[in-house]
Structure formats: C-alpha cells, structure tokens
Image (cartoon, rainbow, N blue to C red; front, side, top):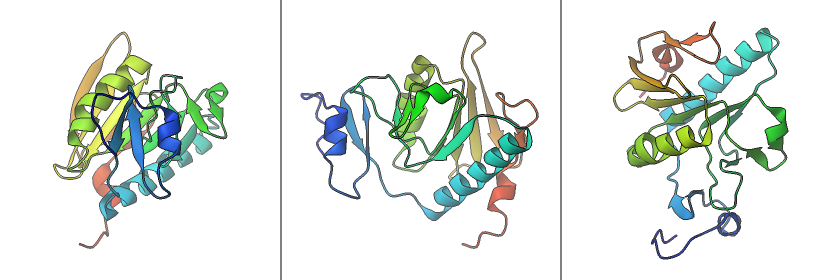
Length: 185
C-alpha cells in the first residue's frame, strides 16, 4: 500500500486490506508489516507464556495478547497498531475488536524491517499515548531496550543474558537467552 503523505488513511482502509495482508496505521499513514521470522515468533510465544503465568500465579487481573491484536492507541480512526505483545490491566479498554487506548506494557520484537518503526515512531507514539512500559527486544544485537514512561521517564539497555526487571511487576525478571535455549539454527 502506498505510504505517500498526501493522503490520510483511516481504520476503514486497514479493514479493507486484502486477506492476509497486515499493516499498521499511525497518524493516518499506513505502514506495511513484513511476515515475522521464526526467532521472532518463538520469543513472542515464550514471553507471552512467562507473562501470563506470572499474572495467573499472582492472581492478577491484567491480560496478555500476542499479535495480531488490534490496539486503537489514540481512540480515533487514524491510529491502529498491532504490538507483538500487549499487556492490558484496565478491562474497560477491551472489547471484541481489541484494546481502545494504551496498553500498560508493550513488547516489540525488532527485525531489520522494523528498526525505524520500533525505535523511533512507536517509541514516541507509545510514550505520548500513555503506555507505562515499552520493551524493544532486538535478536540481531541480543539487546533489550526498556523504557519506563511517566513522571520518572527512564530507559535502560540490557543484554539477553541479563535478568531484566519488569517495572509494572516488581517481582518479575526475564532472561531472554533462556527463552531461546534449545533453538536450532
């Protein structure tokens, strides 16, 4: 789909894409999404499992959703994203179409085609929308950038070998390298 800046697209344009074609809409501009790689999918699956088990074992009420899951970030018809993982704690934001407003925690798995989107466009967009915590997991560099937004905005870079603290869950730490153990090339 053309990403020329002379036309503002809406969610209706996203819904009219051919079956199987995925794209995101940010501030009226459509951005095509490349199919995810195997490591990407493994990380999404493993991270969702860890997060979901943690929430369940602590009788939490937040819900975790892997992509494709619609997030209407600005509650308008000009922004629609599909984060790789969304954790939503406010059930009033959820309906059968997806999440209306900012998830509490978003994780994106970076790929060569998503670097600019994840590190620049989405970083700014998620911060502005009110996401509390944003992780960019980068399998190409074995790093995780963690952004904690709000009054005490901070960012930290971790390696896949570090025990990475989850700020919205003080008792949860994740080591990415363990999630990839046993994966054959």
